[in-house]
Length: 146
Image (cartoon, rainbow, N blue to C red; front, side):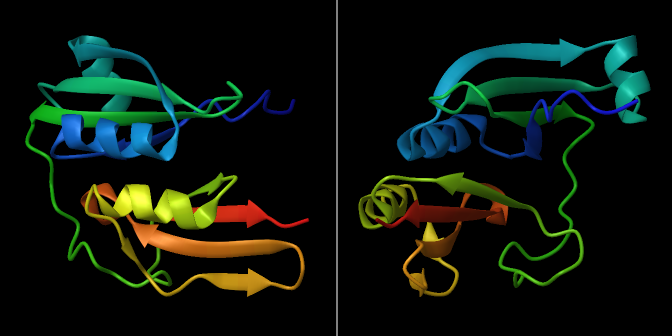
């Protein structure tokens, strides 16, 4: 038996509206927002008294989705500094293909994003970079060349 597809990547955020705005500036489309609570949420997460707000975003091609969750209860727990380097075990990184990496970085900077390193070129294939997005999540950007 094999998996059918990857359905989404989930990220817990403190400010849901700011995170939604960040990923919409990146080019994602808001699919919907909802509130989640009750026994199924508790069972699935292994937490008691789950009550959170969810926003689901999708890429323009409709193939990939990002689920942002902001917990009302229990309170979200900080896992450590938000500016951890890329090689920390369990670090979240989400990668997106973009058509203009410099324009994308400029738009995301208006939402507080900062380059983790610098823009890099991989042979004649890609321009790449990592930016730090909401809650310190590293967002990879890749522009195919040629």
